Image (cartoon, rainbow, N blue to C red):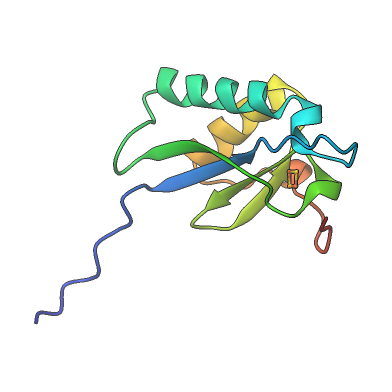
Length: 115
Ligand code: FES
């Protein structure tokens, strides 16, 4: 055993978009264009050369149980929760947080908002 630091995670940052669709009329992220936001984010990350091991990964998720703030996405390892309205919001999350590590305060989900 040596004293080398633990290796970094496989990705530097990992963003998960809830794209859950509910059929029973309850609030869900899919009703707020979550799939389009996911696709836009994925394309932007790729275009900017941020995608891949040691960099950024964009994934879909099922319900993250914060539906009342939806649509939501969460960035790890920081565990920062975002909501968004349009593609420009996604662009800001990509540029500021995923690329530069600076949290986009104006898009944060308020603490305590759950399902
Ligand atoms: S449906 Fe998206 S967080 Fe629950």
